[in-house]
Length: 286
Image (cartoon, rainbow, N blue to C red):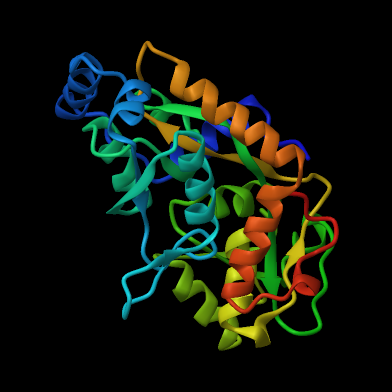
C-alpha cells in the first residue's frame, strides 16, 4: 500500500501534525548527544541496555499494568525482540509521542515507536524504514457504509476530526463539500458521533480500530479509497554519524514486515483492546 499524498499534500499535512518546536535548546541537546563520545550502537553493546519511550494507555502499542507495573503491547513486544538482537534488556522511560522526540534529542532513549516522519521532526531526529504504512478511514453512524472519500463528500454529511491532526488535513482535502467540525481531542469527536451530532469521524486505521475496541457499538471501521490515503509510521532514533544501530533496526524491520510478524504483533495488541481479528478490514495491510 502506498501513500496517495503528493509532495504538496505531504508537506501540508506535516505542517499540521503536532511536532517539536525546533528551538536552539533542542538543537543544542541533539548536538550534545552526538558529541558525547560513545555511539548508540557501542553503548548498547557495552551496557546491554536498550532504552525506549513507553507511552501509557497508547494501545495497541503500549499498555502498563497498574498493579504489577509490567508493560505489554505491540511496541513492547517489538522492542523485546530488538533487544534480543543485542542480547540486551529493556529500560522504559514514560513519555508521550511529542516528548519522545525530545527524549531522543537529549539522549534519554534509543528508540521511539510509531512516529510519523514529518519534515519538521526529521530536522532533529533520524527515522527508520517504515514500521507500517498507516491508511486512513472513518467510523460512521449506523446505516452509513462509505467505501470512498466521495461517499462522504456530500453537503448533508457531518464530519468531525481532531484539530491539528492529519485527520483534519484529510477531511478538508477530500471532503470539502461536507459539513466539517473540528474538536480538540479524538475523544470529543467520538462523543459527537455517539450522540448523533456527527455522521462520520475521520481516523487512521490503528486509532479507528482501537476506538471500536473501547466502544464496540461504533463499529465497523471503514477504510476509504479513491484515493487510498496512507502515511508511514516509523521508529525514531538519535541523529548521529555512526549508522550501525540504524542499519540493524532497518534490517530487523524489513525482515519482520516481510515475514508478517509485525502484523501479528499489531493484531495481538488490538486484541488486548477488545478488537477481534474479524473486525480488522481484510484489505488492511500493515
